[in-house]
Length: 295
Image (cartoon, rainbow, N blue to C red; front, side, top):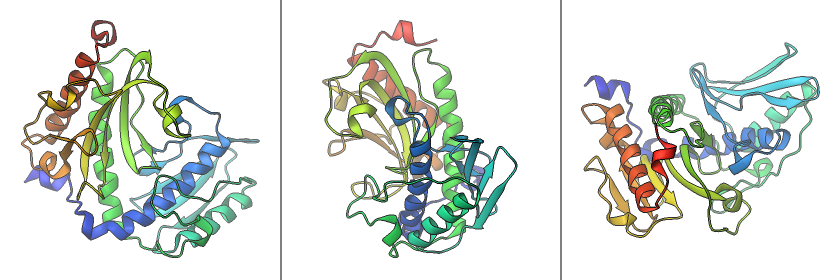
């Protein structure tokens, strides 16, 4: 019972309207960070981060110093703070994406932070430009907070997973394009080139990634995923743990439903076992130099 209290339920059907709206809001903040930050490999300059209050851009450069955009899911406030002491805030409430965009843009302009972003959402079907999106307009603070709590708990396990690897490894960061929290290990070798503005740089090198996603489409609820790029022969038949984890042939990924983690005797151990076993399967079959990459 204690696990169920700590790891909250997140049924997709109960918060999907909030999820779709919040997805667009995080895209706006993420695009602002991406526009003003120096480029980094694999789009790391675009990601958001989990912290003790919600999701944040982290420090973003602008001429006088740095600023930060913070989604505070404890107090349900969007805050913009600057290194010169000025700031602005607005409540997180049910409002259209278009209104959220104009409100954030005005807040930034009031702080002397002019920025122009591409208004077309990424990685979604039938995208509506942010300034014309009056369709997505929901915000249920309880479910937004549950989502953030899951990200916090997941990021702790990802930090442990990251610690056993001495090769290149990403932090646990939130990719607003796909609305997922991910941690990625790299073999150090280039991968076969991919086409695409996003996937080309993202998968320029061999990698093994695991993350959390709220679900949708082929996955009807929140889930953890794991994949290896390029996918080595035989990966779909590899033995992984826990027993509830399965290979999804349509996604070419291993999937472990969040509810199975939540109900495990130790959710942390269950998730860590999934991340380690799926990495080991991909790295072994992909002939990574594991002796050189692991502690």
